[in-house]
Length: 464
Ligand SMILES: Nc1ncnc2c1ncn2[C@@H]1O[C@H](COP(=O)(O)OP(=O)(O)OP(=O)(O)O)[C@@H](O)[C@H]1O
Ligand SMILES: [Mg+2]
Image 1 (cartoon, rainbow, N blue to C red):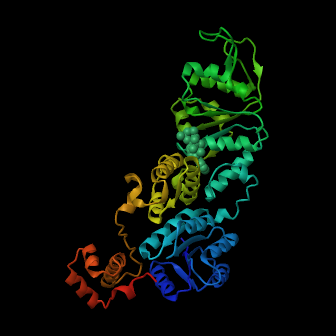
Image 2 (cartoon, helix red, strand yellow):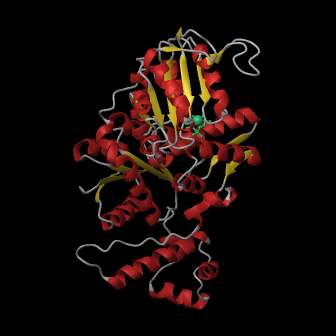
Image 3 (cartoon, rainbow, N blue to C red):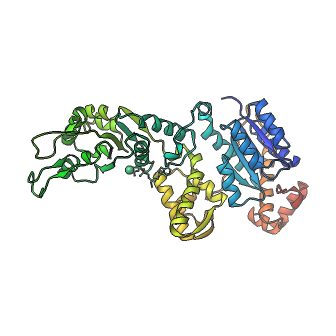
């Protein structure tokens, strides 16, 4: 893989040097700029992949800087730090396209792991990103997402909306299948007619046929009057067949016939009716596998999947998580008359790291719960339910990759030790007794160490 090129922008030389040295040691190609103007020139000249920047800078501040970077090179990953953060600023930075906001003082290893995550999520798509054309009807798609995968999905929604072809939406539970189906309908010329959803898994088998196609009075016990089915309700509109994988095979045959002939026969009717209904089907099951197992008809599968639309799970587009959270907070504040400002950095980091098996639905439910319980202020890591605190709750002592040319073990160990000592001093505001306790050392041993290392608490703490 090509060497990654990182640009550090900060007017404070000491911080810049420290971060630059550390990232250089981690194997990145590092560039430095003392203000936003110099940085913008360098971005053009040096083909930068990622920027790390301070917020408080003379002339052009970090937020403005990120906006300008994103305007010219949207695929650049931006990581921002500041000692003067608040949730409004964090929200603005994330809105402007920052990948992560770090509060100062921060741990350099933490910065490195955020950088790696940033690359993971932007890197593969960065080349494609530039080629994604703008989405004309973005405002009519009521879905949140700015990751390259979601932009590609919106583009596809726009294209398929423009036709009457059958669409098969596949995606894990809670990824937004129904929302995608609604968006396709909203963007199509059928938008002034009905969008009718049917959950094929929730309606008992024996009722589903009449539910879909309608029935004639007296055609079965309980059929007290003629009734039109959902296909007809969606005439000139869109019928959304959700959980299509749950439909039993005998009904699959009938559905196939309707799709082929564009006409249907209500239960008990002697004549068929023409219909003009667009079909969108969805499933969270692997339909190809069901076809192999003979649980789903192959011919119907091909009929339905004229245009397959696959929604990526949330864990594959983690950069959308802060944006989704921000929107959900706003919505649940509004609905419940609450005024929660946001999640603090640690909580946000844990939520971004989480794998989200229930996808957006799970995230939405968690935010709703936190907004209602918390009411005001900022949600902290400790306030999150246990399962979401995950790795963030455990100490992260990452392994250092052994460079090709080898390493000097004693100085590497020493550096590691120094970092932990500095952190302990920072956390305790320079109180040596408390810092020693954090490191499980006797106070005297700790002071001996500091003397030997010529370390003095406040000056060396990376907190400028
Ligand atoms: N991109 C998105 N932006 C905003 N909200 C979203 C997005 N995707 C999904 N949601 C919300 O997440 C919830 C789940 O979405 P939806 O019901 O469309 O998912 P699904 O794939 O049909 O789930 P299931 O498989 O459980 O039926 C809904 O409340 C929806 O509004
Ligand atoms: Mg659904």
